[in-house]
Image: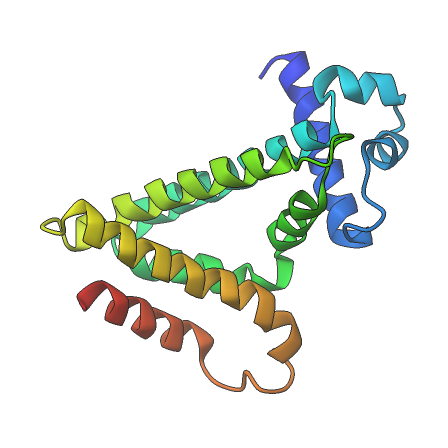
Length: 190
């Protein structure tokens, strides 16, 4: 990794920590620069806008998840169970959910939401990666059916990201991994 890549990684890591700690209301490129101990222009050299920073954070989150998944996949061939375990284990540290909220509220001067491009790119990549996993479970599935199954599974995962922080100490009093895995299998097999 060259010096430029290391600097970008440092900025992204600090930005993710800041977002997880402070939430989206106070998250800005200026705050990231302050936390990094760099000037605003130094951060903007790598990420000219908040949208660029957020998009890079999404890419990093996806890259990290894929790397982790591939490492675990080498140890155990049950990709579906690995994926569910990764999702459920990550619910307590779901900064990606905060990141998505920030993207949804990011508007430029014209009132447009350029952050939606980053979100669309993230979900397109998420759908592609999930499709590859499911194709290995049911290789005969046609593309339309596969896409439907993937969207339903992702909706399940995304719903967990929203409801888990509220229910983990109250109404989620069951083996979440087992129930999610069974639900994903039902979606795949219907």
